[in-house]
Image 1 (cartoon, rainbow, N blue to C red):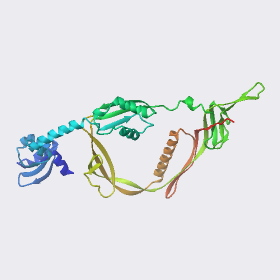
Image 2 (cartoon, rainbow, N blue to C red):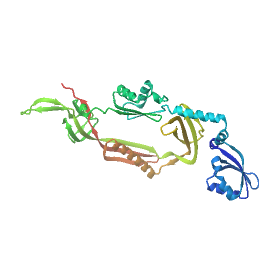
Image 3 (cartoon, rainbow, N blue to C red):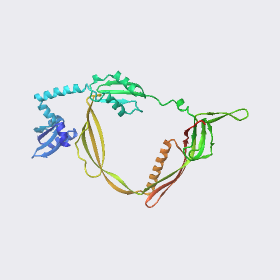
Image 4 (cartoon, rainbow, N blue to C red):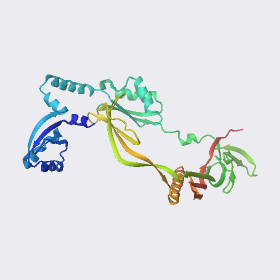
Length: 396
């Protein structure tokens, strides 16, 4: 990796002579001038390698210390480009590169779709491919008005489409139909039945007749709110029956058994502080690794950065960075206090999940005990949750 960076930034190998070499090196370090491969070549003379950028920072340091600097060798990409400026091949390459950039800037390299939920992005991209709207096509061939109309026509769930081209990006903003109106959804007569066994805590009925009252117990499938209404006459006799869509907020209480056990002896990762970094290049399906995977226990993390020629012109190239962090496996044993803390953390995490699901915890009867080899949490949580499953009502 060091050789690759030296080649990209360019390097200069110097021979430095003088009486104040120590002061010269200290001043270089204080000014952020990085030198490598420093070697002594005799009394009052050293040899070192610096980047091209740092080489141009040496003049003030040289003037202060009175050393003599001689260039022994220079190389790298910037040096080769400078040497090749007068060559015809360099001029031709520059001209060809400019033409290539102009040619590529007239293409669509990115298709962005937003606002779609029911219709997935791959599905819409597949449809666009059938309509000959693909990555790499000429921007002149894209009729945004016609494209928006065809998408609305072939996707009944889409009510509004905006298509526009920004730079080398085709952007589709989509708006889909909302869900069925509640009035349509609630027009079918139905009953509400219990999802599971429990004790009714409260019922707030908006439509229908409650069959259970607070304090009653119910099993899964028991009728809670009936969608059949009895219209009585003056003699309190059933004159007729009407059927409605039962609607109510029904809450039942039931126990949830909680049990969790984990050993006191456990393995942990201890970071050693040693890190390594690697890079890779990606162009479409082509992938080039500029690193090797080290042996041993390493935690690997990576990040990929697409390359852009400008804000809207994304190239089909990306550069990735891979970071390796060395660790070793160690065996530790929880103390009783640590084990209880860990068990309480697990219990709080489980209770938080129940609360996020809209459930209310009314009683906690979970106990934690620590043995010689394990920590055991067991008990019962009493929770209150909403219930009521719609069962369509068929008229006799």
